[in-house]
Length: 369
Image (cartoon, rainbow, N blue to C red):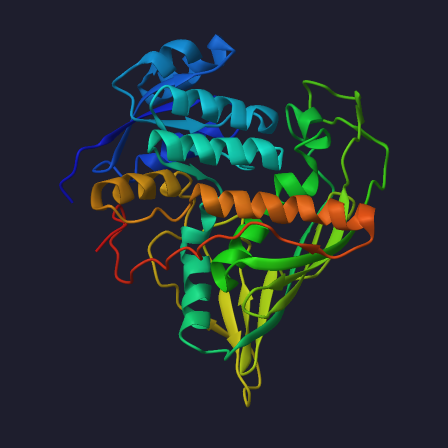
């Protein structure tokens, strides 16, 4: 595919950044990472040396006219602030999830991108992987008939035992819903389309956590956000799905996602991964059957969403990890706590276009036929 490469600058050189450096190398015809920045220059210099790019300050990266797109890997509470600065600097933006902490900040990002005629996108991009694309094809091709319901479970003990900086997971913009919920809600919107209504109950089960990493071993972490959230999503197409996200569970046996249809069921793999397995159960069968995966992105491909934006800019088509999708997911996540506090069902004010399924027969390193 002959096209001008988009020059990328990465802001935020923390835990997730290497996955982006690695993933973006799969798309050398579309994107090229040229620079990285972090408030901690030592972190930026270490990543720059590891990946053969230049380390510069955040201000200098934003002022660099050769950089077309910023990948924003900062902590959640400054996602919107950094995105707005990048847009003001005339750059397209792809952010790590969540899109913003508040709806108001998310709306500001969308409005400025529209005003500047720039594109914004947001993780997760795992729904572009082989597992969720295979699941989408099964549903789109009618293997399970009309989707009528489903379940989704993200439950564990939280990241404080291992993460080098676990404090933000329990502050505003954190918790299991804002940390891991975007994978699950985005996957469900990818599979079923936009959400219509939410009903939920949420709880803070433990008022403090204890850090286990060597950097902060034994420190107490105040919990300021719900750590167990259970709710029901009604989708515009009619399906009703149970979603639970929790940092309060030691173990469980629930599959990540299952979608139930009028003519069968599909078991969907972990939406925080790119691969399978994907299994289908049809009436008359004696057991679930595993289905071959339909695209080559079955290993860690973080950054595929940013590369897809580059393809979209070249061809004029919409990119799949759009700001509108990410804002709708943000709206859904906020609706859980709102429903719990009010005791009422929350009707979503936002909407989005269901992301287009990826074409079949792609070679690795390509995103368009």
